Length: 247
Image 1 (cartoon, rainbow, N blue to C red):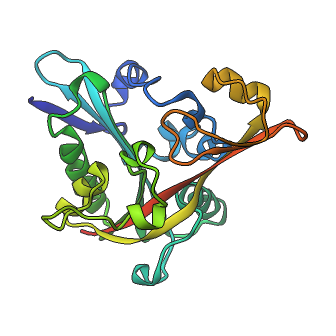
Image 2 (cartoon, helix red, strand yellow; image 1 turned 60 degrees about the horizontal axis):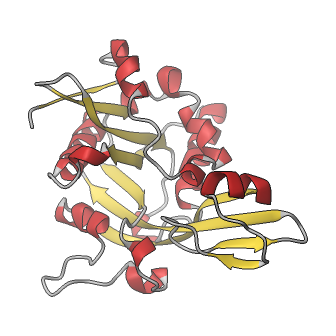
C-alpha cells in the first residue's frame, strides 16, 4: 500500500479523515479521564506529534499515531514510572503549565484500521513516528506498549513482558514490532492506565452484569476489572510495558 503520511500540523485540512479513525478501541479503553489532557488539545498543542496515514490510491485514512513531548531527564535505563500512559500525559500537561523544555518523546497510540491489519502497517507507522520524533529534535522515544496478545493469555505481566520465542524475539506481537525496530524493553508499568467508574457505567461499556464483587473478566482487558458491589464501583488498572527507542 502506498501511504501518504503527514502530521496534523502539516495537513490541518484532514480533520474529517481523522474523525473516521474513531470507535475502534473497546469502549472502556476510551474512558480514562487522563486522556483528555492530551486528546482534548491535539490541534493547538500537539499537532506536530499526530501522524495520519492515508491510502494514496483511495484517499481513505488507514492508520494514525500519537506521541507527546516530555521533560523527563532521568536515566531511562534506570527504569520508567509505574504510571506509564497516564504518567506520560500528566507529565506533559505539567510541563506545559510550568514552561518546562521537553527533552524526550513518548508514544501514546498507534492505531491501524481493523480491515487493513496484518500487512505490516504497524511497523511502518512506528517507523514514521520515529522519523517524526527525530525531525522534532528528540533522540529518545519511549513507549508504554499495550501488549496486544496479553488479553488472550492468563500469564502475569512481569513474566509475559519478557517471554520470547525460539528466535529471541518477544512472544507478544506488538512488543515484537518494537524490538524489531530497535527498541529495548525497560520495565513493566503496572498502573499505566486507571479507569474507575460506577457499575452502571461498566455495564454500559461492556454489556456485562457487574453484579458480584471480585475480579471480572472483560473482553480485551489485559487484567480483570475489580468490582465492588457495596461501593458501586469497578476499577481497571492496566499494565503496559515500557520500551526505549534510541533514535
